[in-house]
Length: 152
Image (cartoon, rainbow, N blue to C red; front, side):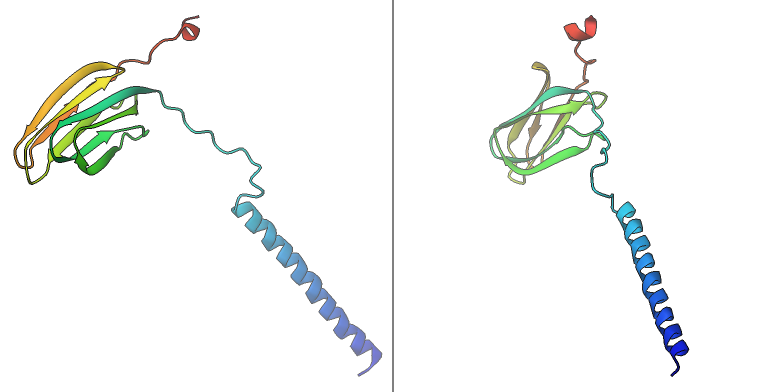
């Protein structure tokens, strides 16, 4: 092999190495952008939804399935199964979503009563009787409470 052929073969290898390095760097930048960079970017702020305090209470004896509305922008229900009575929970419910609690007695039946209070004020009571008896308590949320700051 002549000196010119050796030099040309070495030059091609160098170009391949440089080309591969550039390609790897570009790929790295693309992946960096796809996966969010360093994480120093500002994240989208959580959407604040005004809420009201709602207390759900179930009294009686035995076990029930309880479903109730809690804090969720979409107003999804939370379900608790095989709940031993008495049971009580205070949660935040988004304004615009009617607070609701549903109870279903188990196969042994009995009697259970649901109660609903909004911002500490009693709103509704209902009673379930017998095997797989059902009851629902619901209400309407009032407008957001005004504060002195908001009135100023």
